[in-house]
Image 1 (cartoon, rainbow over the protein chains, first blue to last red):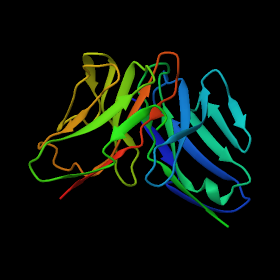
Image 2 (cartoon, rainbow over the protein chains, first blue to last red; image 1 turned 90 degrees about the vertical axis):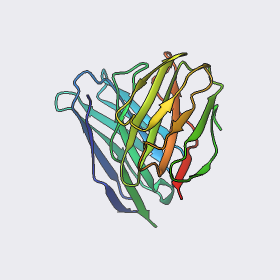
Image 3 (cartoon, rainbow over the protein chains, first blue to last red; image 1 turned 120 degrees about the vertical axis):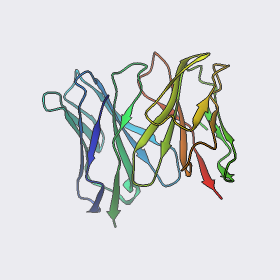
Image 4 (cartoon, rainbow over the protein chains, first blue to last red; image 1 turned 30 degrees about the horizontal axis):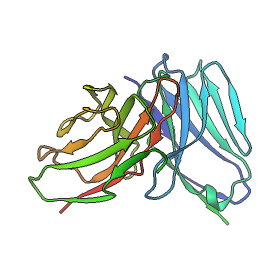
Length: 112
Length: 112
């Protein structure tokens, strides 16, 4: 089955700095890669996703890059704000209607 | 609750007791999933169902059971065979027209 590894497990940045979280996956058939943000005690919320036919996707301060050859994808958050503090999970899936495999999560702390 | 409702929010189980977690969705999604979340770990798949009256085991199905008698409902029973059930349980759903998951708000189960 798929194995998704995520690094780092914790990340502390100063407000205004950038944050980068990296994930690798093992199943070359995976073609959908979402990122979720989870605040303490709450449900995960989708913040951005990318499909394997695209190398990069941006949404305001958030971007995701995908390297299919190396089987890794990354989340980039620019101009971080205290409200970005949360746990972020990456996931991989074979796409439509298929189960997700999640990384172990990254706890991001943005210091004011 | 964004179309998918989990109840109760908190649940306490005594040793040797079976408990059932509820998950209901009104999104007309065909597929539903149960994940377990432990501190410092990602989401691990317990069971999933892509159609009524059919379900498959995930990676950590031992000690759990499910049913899918209605499209809207996918209850999870934590049996006494599950030796370490204390965790946060998340239900999710998706459709064949949508790549991402919609998550419920979760149930925190504690053994007392």
